[in-house]
Image (tube, rainbow, N blue to C red; front, side):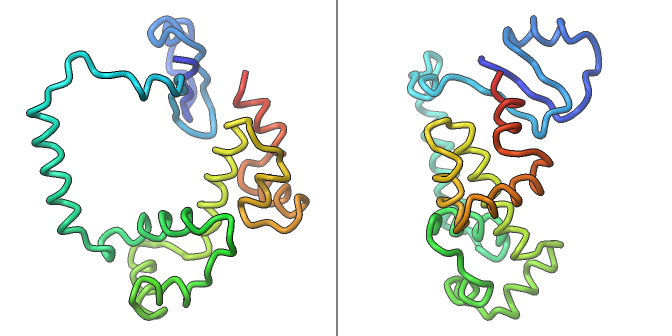
Length: 176
């Protein structure tokens, strides 16, 4: 592990957490996370159980085939918005049409869950900006453009609203 972050305050001895996880541990962070080397995702599981994997895959396929977008409209919208970046993100009416429903129906479904389309769009941009910034392969200007901002200054203002700090300060706090 490279680091572990918790959004809550330390509930004991920080050294105990560092020893337990074997890496840096940060508290009062923006989110809970575990940072690990990407190559770990390529490792073959030694104790992998193929019959259990087959069973889980069959269960997942069953759930997907019975999936109703209305039941999880937030994730459906987030996934679609993410795929559309860096192009202009659609207004609610166009998104509703792409989901084969009326704007009124989409608004109703979101309101039922206490959600707002503009907030979902903003959250997708925030998540993408954070991910790309931490990735370290893109300039702030490139990230701004990818997130749909025409000017870096607009992106910087949005970033400060999202994280209460500049992109460079965010990066400095997150990567140590």
